Length: 416
Image (cartoon, rainbow, N blue to C red; front, side, top):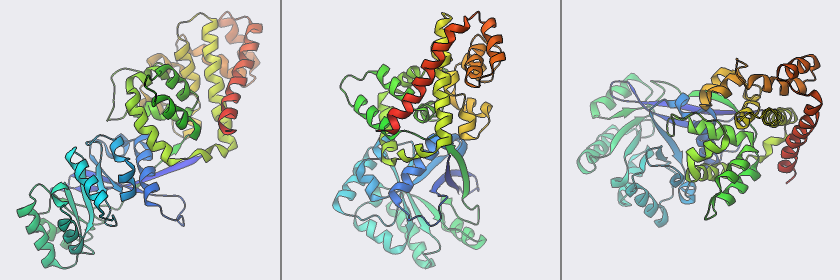
């Protein structure tokens, strides 16, 4: 099981109300060599797709640290300007390419915050002509110790760059906060208000090769959404992330989802490609080496195919819904979260929700029969088969086909 972590620290306004959150990378391996590029990718994937921005920040703005490498790789342009505030690290090398890139992105509406500003950094960015293109300056009250120079920076910003909002960061005492207030800072951040709060979730292992297949498919001139949906359907992790994304504050739809294909149509190839690019950079294809997780994922695939085929055998026009009931049935075990909470995050069709909760519905006994067969609960198999008027002999080949199909997906991906 992969435990994912993100820390958040609030940025407060002059009335101590939350204005935004800075999202920070955290790892379970304290001695791990820090990679700024990978840290940002982890933060974005975990915040948007695993934990969920609604849980992390609600409707508040989000500040995320960016290195010059990630800027130049085009990661930020996979997002809309209003999605996040790009927090530029003080270590960014201001070469000609980076300067032009920041100016171009700012012209497109992307918002930048310069982090850990000192007198020297302020002068460097001033000389590079970049201050007109910034939205926020974060003044480091621990490193920027000269109070007179702090006043001079505030004066310069207010008179030459009145569009820039000032954030006093690393505020650790009441005296620091009062000084920042008196100087006219707009926002405040630091241990005096709150230390970074750790948020956690668990992630379903994913198949790296799926991303490559999908990028190839979506890069075609004529995108076949049915084929895109079929590829996503073979990767439980990606399908779960897709539905989480559709139900996030950025993309929330009123329509409930009854199939992976419908989710693909609603989100569209452009948005899917954006996230595929970020996920492919992450390259977490080694997660599939956890045997107990493999068993749960194969079980999900089996239940999905078995439920789908049983619905078809009954001539029900709800085979896609039956598929998703089985498909998502092992999420509580994989993600270690209650089923009712997970259902709220996915915006599924009501009949799919009823099946997952084993409430009364046309599809519930079909799903229960798939599970009973999997668990060799023959008394329940007999009972449910009689209830559904099934020939028990006709179920045997369906069961075998579903088992083979489920195992073949895992084998195809992990042996590439």
